[in-house]
Image (cartoon, rainbow, N blue to C red; front, side, top):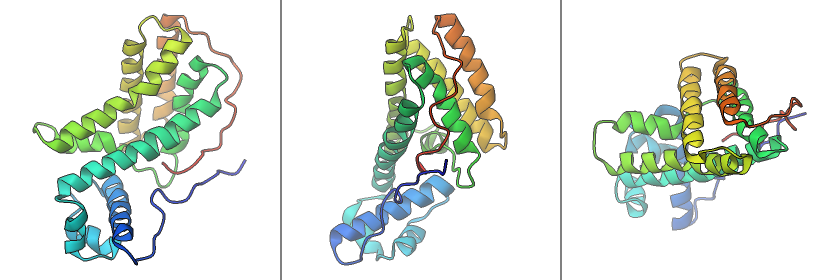
Length: 219
């Protein structure tokens, strides 16, 4: 089945209004931050990619930190809610199967040519050791990934849904870092470890394959 792809995360816009300029800046920053990181991406590069004047950027975002926080918010909308939650929900018939499907989704994501790691994790690494608005925002968006995991764990009958969601996120994060380091089998290894958590909690899984192996879109 061919992969279904959405429009780009922030669609191309005509350069005719102030609102359009803000969207172009956000789209350019999203792509650059997610691919190259925060520290390696300067304001000059963002405005060049967006095709706007530097004063236009500062008219919409008071500082680079404000722009980073806006990109983190956009990443949650596109990656956590619009991609990961969507893919997980459609791949399993039961809450337990949907939880394990996280690693099927990750396996396909890790093998894509446009795999760019996790912007939340990269932001945490880049700001570790400080007390900055970016660190606080990145930590919040990272924590928000647990929300749907906790809900599914509760529906599946886990004894401690919060603890289960945290443990699953540890495996997810480890797989992301390992895949970024070049381990093409990271998702499969994490999936096998996740099954041990399922066994411990007594969560039953079907042996049937996921509903679909096609990736919904680029996150």
